[in-house]
Length: 327
Ligand code: BDP
Image 1: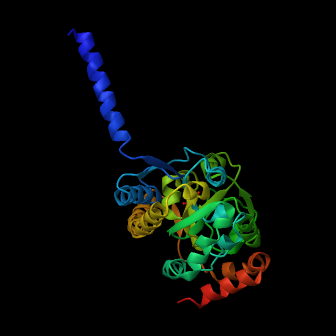
Image 2: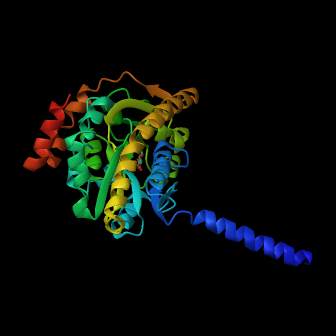
Image 3: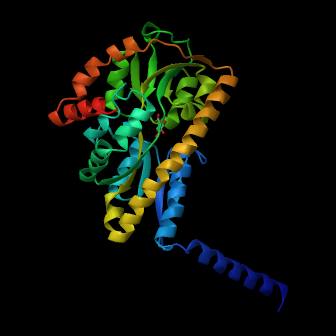
């Protein structure tokens, strides 16, 4: 056999071997995430994929398309509703205009702490909110952590509500967040996450708001060096599946999806705590001016019109009451 033939046969065999490895899984579900590889949400869905592959004896796997490869959140949500994307990991914020129930855990200062949020979202209220995705062509699978979100900007330290006056902040694509920022005396503009860095850099906006890990991994702290821990939102993140994909699975596969999604939650929380501490340390060391001891009372009081505007139906009012009554 001449060398060229040998090389060709080798290439063919290697190709066949690769195909075998790649097709070890009968079906690979595509999952979208805006965050970069290594971010807790991305790693949690990968962990879920491993569990799913095991539970289904290699029938189902998940591939995570991180870094908004499948589009920014507003678009990826639509694509998931259409069944073009199988799964999506998104903050609850961009669902506010679609699934009214998601507005409730997205309300400013609704949760007293991350523990309070866990108690609510791990219980019956969380389940009701997951179920509320169904009529919108989505299946809610699990909630992930998103820490607490606070304002950062490129102009000056915010030490009281007055300092926010006249500033322009980017918010997630949710009408409620536009009203939240207006109620604080500032201006808001909804914008996809991926456009925020250059919008701050070029002065189109003064800043945005997010948790430590996002402020870090997006690089926003490089262009907005004032961060004030007013912690106006403790908004959970959610993992959803397209109803089209869901309906194409057998009941056993659906159960395996539910179980492995649920089992990925403690994995995520663990990764989250580590990432949060790491990001905080990195940002503090980078020279960002962090205002920690802000009086939140005026911020909380200013939110009344937001509650009045969005908590309108009896169902939503009752949900707020039950959340407030949860320990
Ligand atoms: C991050 C969320 C992500 C959102 C982003 C945002 O994890 O889902 O896209 O905030 O502000 O904290 O858009």
